[in-house]
Length: 301
Image 1: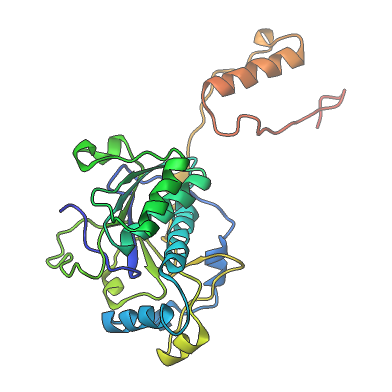
Image 2: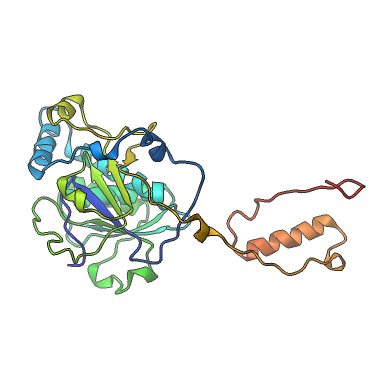
């Protein structure tokens, strides 16, 4: 099987680098997740064992009154918001979500729905559907949004031609064999849910997020959880520092033809319209973004 095993409510894998060369974006403005981590020590984060994670789920869905569909909705939303923090829909819109038959697959169906509303173009592969009302309802919700489903037989041999992002939502607790020998696919993003697990320490990708802003104080105290603070109203937060970017590699040279006065339209409005039409035809991002410079009669600014 191409995709490595996931434990339900443990984490989600998001693959991007294997699909096409990564496009690095740079901004001097920190995201909310980066700001919230500024004063937090990532080395102090608590990592749970599988037994502890199981106990927490049982407590949430037992005495604390959470339902499966409620946790599933929170988990799927966390995955979708984590993806949107790193991969903007303007550049990475084509998302394939591979869903397994259990609760992890249900989380993937929820994530696909939210990604659709976030402006992405999700497609779902759900080969072994679970005949329960909860899962049937999630499928109906996706169908109502005209989100396409693809069979395993129709999956392309090369994902890079059809998709920008691949979300692994395949397996749950019943699957116990993962990437044992270290030869599996290496994801770009890991989304830990509730709290990171011990196996997440082996994650070597650039983007590790924590999702699921619903841990009650009683659980945090019992398991001595030390988790990064969630920024504002966000349902996800980055664990660790964002990847370093080589600023020099971002430099681009913009070379254009010479600009001669005898080639300019006499009417500046017509000249502007020509330039704007050229920008539209070139498919430039935000062609209506521009800077205006003026000079006086003395030909000075």
